[in-house]
Amino acid sequence: MSETAELKLPGQTIELPIVVGTENEKAVDISNLRAKTGFITLDNGYMNTGACTSAITFIDGEKGILRYRGIPIEVLAERSSFLETAYLLIEGKLPNQAELDFFTNRVRRHTMIHEDIKRFYDGFPRDAHPMAILASVVSSLSTFYQHEESRSEADHFSLNTVRLLAKLPTIAAYAYKKSIGQPLMYPQNSMSYCENFLHMMFSTPAEHYDVDPLMTEILNLLLILHADHEQNCSTSTVRMVSSSKASLFAAITAGICALWGPRHGGANEEVIDMLTQMRNEGGGVRKYIDQAKDKNSKFKLMGFGHRVYKNFDPRAKIIKAACDKLLSKMKIADPLLDLAKELEEAALKDSYFIERKLYPNVDFYSGIIYKAMGIPTVAFTVMFALGRLPGWIAHSKEYSNEPGNKINRPRQIYIGEPLAEYVSIEKRK
Image 1: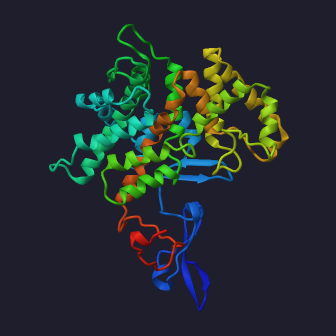
Image 2: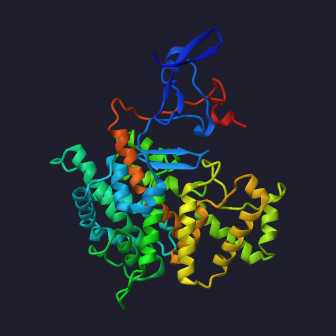
Image 3: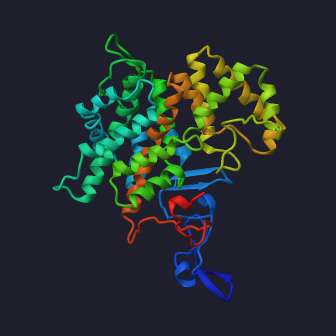
């Protein structure tokens, strides 16, 4: 017999089922609470609310564990490619060689965007934020790829999955080229996924460009580390929009917009902004370490600690080694990168940060890496979106295939005026 929880309310006591996950996570199922009692739960920010069951990603913040479909992130980072990881998340299993080859080749055949879409870039201001461009162009894809009646719903979803994975790097690279006034570079389907993106970003028609193998390797790693992270703000947004049976393009556009906010995907951009502030104001790293520990100071040390991981961010341990490797090879003379390394070393030796487990997180290192690669700070969140895309697609698919799924419709507790009188305009104060 399943376990139950007992809830005592004024005048009644009810039993609620307890749901136990495969990793022994426990939840009280309140699906029928309102119907049985008239009560709802109130959970600001959904910090204690499980909105769904999911078989995609497992996180244990206390132990610093992150797994995709049961596979530890450390293993995937060492042995997998981004497209293989995308297949794992979306299809629910690692592909065999034939499946991976078919999937990879299918993505390669869809990297170009419709020529009419290129005209959209002429209408955007030169200083348009790349996330605004990304959201706008992804949303427009629904007008170019409307439902083909000859395809089943599953086939249509599969094709749109490939289209998004293939075209998002092209859309993102075109946004960057637009911002610097360079011609848009067509994708090269002979290249790997990450090579192709770097080629579109940094090559020009005027001269040959060789993509650095180390940059390709580290970009592949970064995209894997960002591919999914359970029910965060943007992923929950994708699931909610999918619940309305909107198109996959609409759901992914909503995810991009949710990711854009500084509380979510903009964190690595804030790391560079913080380092810029420190450089401009001067005073040395110790000054800012002391300010971060001072409760009366308004200065915040960005890129340290994590809302979910209370011990360490497993992605940060992986990415730190990649960051050190890239900076060592490139030998970039950049005061911000030098400052970042000083800050990292000082914080890791400071007892205040050690005792509170405020270690550098994935945003700290990814911001440094993207800057070293030459990606503009304003485009950091776009890079986050490129990585998170497979997770968004996987969650949209999982929700859509869930038996008996319902449109998401949170409740509220109304605290406004009770029944009010309509006052004619001439009598209003």
